[in-house]
Amino acid sequence: MNLDKDALRAIRVEVMQVLYQYDLYRSEKIAFIPRFELEESEPIFQDIIDHLDEIDHIIESNLYNYSLYRLSFLDRSIIRLATYELKYTDLAKQVVINEAIELTKIYTNLDDEKQHKFNNKVIDQIAKAIEG
Image (cartoon, rainbow, N blue to C red; front, side, top):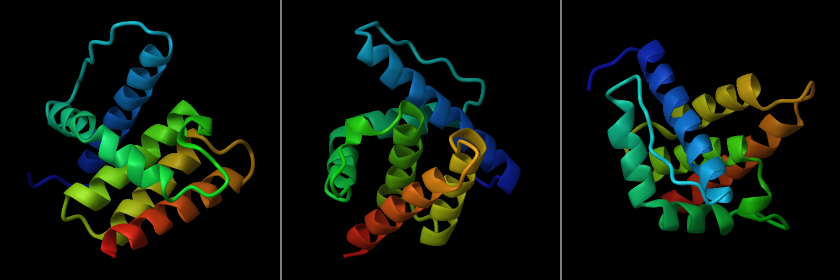
């Protein structure tokens, strides 16, 4: 898959949005049927779902005095996507972290920098744990 930076960002955004919807539907115990506009997004989403228990375990073990389900649905989807990319792809660690923080700045910052700083710290810790 040879895609430019903008195409990769679009795929990340779509996967993030579908992960958000997945969590939202699951929290309400409603059946979820994902829909994708970009064909490249579906296999990534499915792979994340296939590895979700391990991804969530990695996140949980790197959250201090916090739990996975205390995170907002959107932040959880960004961190899950980043954890997946760090663990199961050969993307550069810094690219994954930078992209996750950009998504946080665009979609979840609430007029301050606290959320992207929190997500940055968590994802950086996850990257270090995965590297060993």
